[in-house]
Image (cartoon, rainbow, N blue to C red):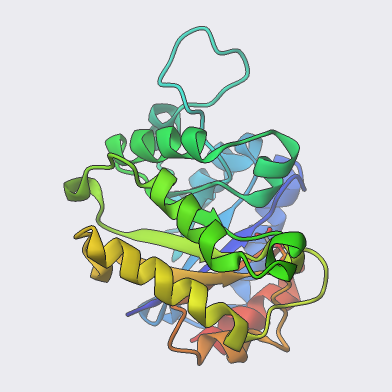
Length: 252
Ligand code: PEP
């Protein structure tokens, strides 16, 4: 299965800076890299239009993701951006359930479930984040926590709408801390999630499992060579062009 590398630019860069970063990354990539990896970048909503224009105009082999989507279709929801609006911008992917949204904006699995449903209706591919906090891991609850997240998020989701789905296992304690999880410690969560989805007759071939949490060029190969994962979700280092390119080159 092709590797999927996602750069989450978080709340950084205006649209002009975003174009510059995209161009720096693109110029450093060898021709044909898209045959071995799917490269995805997730800029802020305000940059989506500009980035999409550059990708389309220059026919770049980089795919566009949003960082979030509204749980509502349309109507009186000031400040929200819908899946329909993202689709109109040729957005291919969308991150949902990132721990920064769960922690800072009280996002629940129920809300993430609604977002997933709307993304699938709009034919946008979901990148669904799951993961436990440090306290939950200390208590040995990482499998229970992640399984419950998956159970809630996939409740009543139509299987025929799922074609290309990424689940990013991101232990919360590994995000932005410089402390990546030991691949050995990630195995049980990924295995239990796969077993659960399988037991509910989801077609597991349509899922790619990503690792996220303090990915750097130094630890990339450790996860890329691990059969558990088909890719990476990169935060901080995705806006450092040299580092992101090194991560991509090591993922080929
Ligand atoms: C993330 O934002 O999903 C992430 C994994 O961040 P970082 O790589 O900075 O830990």
